Image 1 (spheres, rainbow, N blue to C red):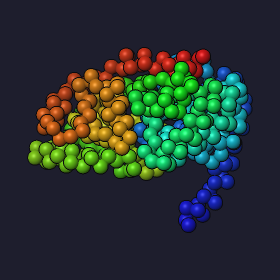
Image 2: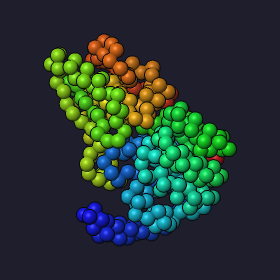
Image 3: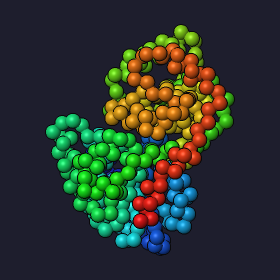
Image 4: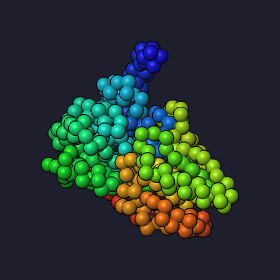
Length: 348
């Protein structure tokens, strides 16, 4: 009841501000790239993606005007949020794991794809997950009609399962516009230079938890306690809204916090990536959609200070190896070359 009342009060205000922001953009010249769905919520993994995408645009499209549109504006009104879009504008959708049946945001982007049939639309690297059920199958069929019906849609997958789903089910007649690329957060390298102390836990508390991790977490805790290691807790999710104006500060603060640990234990994909890009040793566990292990196996397996575990085998040996990593350095030069399909899609 309370949430209904809040929506009744705040939704008209949100729609009005969405409209005003779009009106102010009318004087911006042509040759624009829109970055859609910059998070308004507290998921700092999603905000890291946004920061990486903005850096990617600055490096590769310095002459283009970048228009930032928040998820809140799209929630309040897609019509008003994108009322100033012209036919020569490119619509880019921020990367992440919202496509599929786990989150309601998918419906929003099906609407956008249908609303702009002649604009080029480029999805930054995604994980796509549909539950194995009649509901999941129905959602796949619905999405496939929309994706396959757009002649200028490009989708980047950040893992093999998502790529296979795209080329076999969602866009089988448009395989030439589907690409396998790394998570865009890997574009960033941000060493912090902090003194390290103790181990840090970064475990999710949502619907993507893999229940099979319980035994591994318990075993790791026992090892830490037996060795009297200092333990700290963090998360890449904070329970407050974060605006476009504040996200750089928030992401920088999270990087700084994680870089103070000798070792991070996480089941969050971006817990693993925050650790990597700050040169922090990390042991990662998988999540429900298996995006952690898929991204690791595709792009990060050769990096010595990153390790994904799926059972308790050799845990002490793995932990010892990670605690002994003292000269960690993430070299993202080769990874950056793998984003060329995104550049080509926007330029085509």
